[in-house]
Length: 167
Image (cartoon, rainbow, N blue to C red):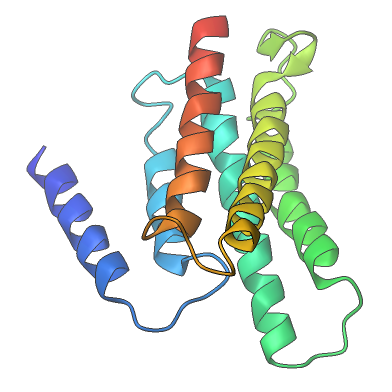
Protein backbone atom coordinates (compact mmCIF):
# COMPACT_ATOMS: atom_id res chain seq x y z
CA UNK A 1 0.00 0.00 0.00
CA UNK A 2 2.90 2.36 0.74
CA UNK A 3 4.26 1.75 -2.77
CA UNK A 4 0.88 2.62 -4.29
CA UNK A 5 0.61 5.81 -2.22
CA UNK A 6 4.17 6.76 -3.15
CA UNK A 7 3.45 6.24 -6.86
CA UNK A 8 0.27 8.31 -6.66
CA UNK A 9 2.10 11.16 -4.93
CA UNK A 10 5.03 10.95 -7.36
CA UNK A 11 2.89 11.01 -10.52
CA UNK A 12 0.57 13.69 -9.10
CA UNK A 13 3.55 15.92 -8.31
CA UNK A 14 5.03 15.48 -11.78
CA UNK A 15 1.68 16.00 -13.47
CA UNK A 16 0.86 19.16 -11.52
CA UNK A 17 4.29 20.73 -12.01
CA UNK A 18 4.92 20.10 -15.70
CA UNK A 19 5.53 23.18 -17.79
CA UNK A 20 5.28 21.98 -21.37
CA UNK A 21 1.90 20.71 -22.48
CA UNK A 22 1.62 17.84 -24.97
CA UNK A 23 -1.53 16.63 -26.72
CA UNK A 24 -1.90 14.02 -23.99
CA UNK A 25 0.28 13.96 -20.90
CA UNK A 26 3.10 11.38 -21.25
CA UNK A 27 3.18 10.92 -17.48
CA UNK A 28 -0.47 9.88 -17.62
CA UNK A 29 0.42 7.33 -20.28
CA UNK A 30 3.13 5.83 -18.06
CA UNK A 31 0.81 5.77 -15.05
CA UNK A 32 -1.95 3.97 -16.93
CA UNK A 33 0.54 1.52 -18.41
CA UNK A 34 1.92 0.68 -14.98
CA UNK A 35 -1.56 0.10 -13.63
CA UNK A 36 -2.46 -2.31 -16.40
CA UNK A 37 0.35 -4.66 -15.49
CA UNK A 38 -1.24 -5.67 -12.21
CA UNK A 39 -4.90 -5.76 -13.29
CA UNK A 40 -5.06 -9.48 -13.95
CA UNK A 41 -3.21 -10.20 -10.73
CA UNK A 42 -5.90 -8.24 -8.89
CA UNK A 43 -8.70 -10.10 -10.68
CA UNK A 44 -10.01 -7.15 -12.69
CA UNK A 45 -12.19 -8.25 -15.61
CA UNK A 46 -10.53 -8.12 -19.02
CA UNK A 47 -13.15 -5.78 -20.49
CA UNK A 48 -12.31 -3.17 -17.88
CA UNK A 49 -8.60 -3.68 -18.46
CA UNK A 50 -9.26 -3.38 -22.20
CA UNK A 51 -10.99 -0.02 -21.73
CA UNK A 52 -7.84 1.38 -20.14
CA UNK A 53 -5.60 -0.29 -22.74
CA UNK A 54 -7.71 1.41 -25.43
CA UNK A 55 -7.35 4.73 -23.64
CA UNK A 56 -3.61 4.20 -23.36
CA UNK A 57 -3.30 3.28 -27.05
CA UNK A 58 -5.20 6.32 -28.31
CA UNK A 59 -3.47 8.67 -25.85
CA UNK A 60 -0.08 7.37 -26.95
CA UNK A 61 -1.05 7.60 -30.61
CA UNK A 62 -2.27 11.20 -30.32
CA UNK A 63 0.80 12.16 -28.32
CA UNK A 64 3.04 10.66 -31.01
CA UNK A 65 1.00 12.36 -33.76
CA UNK A 66 1.49 15.66 -31.94
CA UNK A 67 5.26 15.08 -31.95
CA UNK A 68 5.14 14.31 -35.69
CA UNK A 69 3.26 17.55 -36.35
CA UNK A 70 5.56 19.65 -34.15
CA UNK A 71 8.62 18.26 -35.93
CA UNK A 72 6.90 19.17 -39.23
CA UNK A 73 7.50 15.74 -40.68
CA UNK A 74 5.52 15.25 -43.86
CA UNK A 75 3.59 12.16 -42.85
CA UNK A 76 0.00 12.03 -44.12
CA UNK A 77 -2.75 11.52 -41.55
CA UNK A 78 -0.47 11.31 -38.49
CA UNK A 79 -3.33 10.61 -36.04
CA UNK A 80 -4.72 7.72 -38.08
CA UNK A 81 -1.30 6.28 -38.87
CA UNK A 82 -0.19 6.54 -35.23
CA UNK A 83 -3.43 4.98 -33.98
CA UNK A 84 -3.22 2.01 -36.34
CA UNK A 85 0.49 1.55 -35.55
CA UNK A 86 -0.03 1.64 -31.79
CA UNK A 87 -3.02 -0.70 -32.05
CA UNK A 88 -0.98 -3.21 -34.02
CA UNK A 89 1.94 -2.87 -31.60
CA UNK A 90 -0.50 -3.62 -28.77
CA UNK A 91 -2.74 -6.32 -30.20
CA UNK A 92 -0.24 -8.45 -32.15
CA UNK A 93 1.98 -9.26 -29.13
CA UNK A 94 -1.14 -10.00 -27.06
CA UNK A 95 -2.34 -12.38 -29.75
CA UNK A 96 1.06 -14.07 -30.06
CA UNK A 97 1.24 -14.55 -26.27
CA UNK A 98 -2.34 -15.89 -26.31
CA UNK A 99 -3.62 -13.14 -24.04
CA UNK A 100 -6.37 -12.48 -26.58
CA UNK A 101 -8.13 -15.03 -28.75
CA UNK A 102 -9.35 -17.38 -26.02
CA UNK A 103 -12.86 -18.51 -27.07
CA UNK A 104 -13.97 -18.81 -23.43
CA UNK A 105 -13.01 -15.21 -22.61
CA UNK A 106 -15.67 -13.42 -24.64
CA UNK A 107 -18.56 -11.05 -24.12
CA UNK A 108 -21.22 -10.86 -26.86
CA UNK A 109 -19.01 -13.16 -28.97
CA UNK A 110 -16.06 -10.75 -28.93
CA UNK A 111 -12.82 -11.21 -26.98
CA UNK A 112 -13.16 -9.21 -23.76
CA UNK A 113 -9.85 -7.39 -24.12
CA UNK A 114 -10.54 -6.47 -27.76
CA UNK A 115 -14.05 -5.31 -26.85
CA UNK A 116 -12.63 -3.22 -24.02
CA UNK A 117 -9.93 -1.74 -26.27
CA UNK A 118 -12.51 -0.67 -28.85
CA UNK A 119 -14.73 0.79 -26.12
CA UNK A 120 -11.73 2.61 -24.63
CA UNK A 121 -10.73 4.04 -28.02
CA UNK A 122 -14.23 5.31 -28.73
CA UNK A 123 -14.68 6.64 -25.20
CA UNK A 124 -11.38 8.51 -25.26
CA UNK A 125 -12.10 10.04 -28.68
CA UNK A 126 -15.55 11.18 -27.51
CA UNK A 127 -13.98 12.81 -24.45
CA UNK A 128 -11.45 14.65 -26.63
CA UNK A 129 -14.21 15.99 -28.90
CA UNK A 130 -16.25 17.01 -25.86
CA UNK A 131 -13.24 18.90 -24.49
CA UNK A 132 -12.80 20.72 -27.82
CA UNK A 133 -16.53 21.47 -27.99
CA UNK A 134 -16.57 22.84 -24.43
CA UNK A 135 -13.58 25.04 -25.20
CA UNK A 136 -15.27 26.33 -28.34
CA UNK A 137 -18.37 27.33 -26.38
CA UNK A 138 -16.17 29.12 -23.81
CA UNK A 139 -14.14 31.19 -26.33
CA UNK A 140 -11.17 28.81 -26.37
CA UNK A 141 -10.87 28.56 -22.59
CA UNK A 142 -11.43 25.56 -20.34
CA UNK A 143 -14.33 25.55 -17.89
CA UNK A 144 -12.27 23.87 -15.17
CA UNK A 145 -8.55 23.40 -14.67
CA UNK A 146 -7.20 20.12 -16.07
CA UNK A 147 -10.37 19.66 -18.13
CA UNK A 148 -8.30 17.93 -20.82
CA UNK A 149 -7.23 15.32 -18.26
CA UNK A 150 -10.42 15.08 -16.22
CA UNK A 151 -12.77 14.34 -19.13
CA UNK A 152 -10.91 11.30 -20.54
CA UNK A 153 -10.33 9.84 -17.07
CA UNK A 154 -13.97 10.42 -16.13
CA UNK A 155 -15.27 8.88 -19.36
CA UNK A 156 -12.94 5.87 -19.11
CA UNK A 157 -14.02 5.40 -15.49
CA UNK A 158 -17.69 5.49 -16.51
CA UNK A 159 -17.03 2.97 -19.29
CA UNK A 160 -15.21 0.75 -16.78
CA UNK A 161 -18.12 0.98 -14.36
CA UNK A 162 -20.54 0.08 -17.15
CA UNK A 163 -18.53 -3.05 -17.98
CA UNK A 164 -18.29 -3.84 -14.27
CA UNK A 165 -22.08 -3.90 -14.11
CA UNK A 166 -22.35 -5.98 -17.30
CA UNK A 167 -19.80 -8.67 -16.42
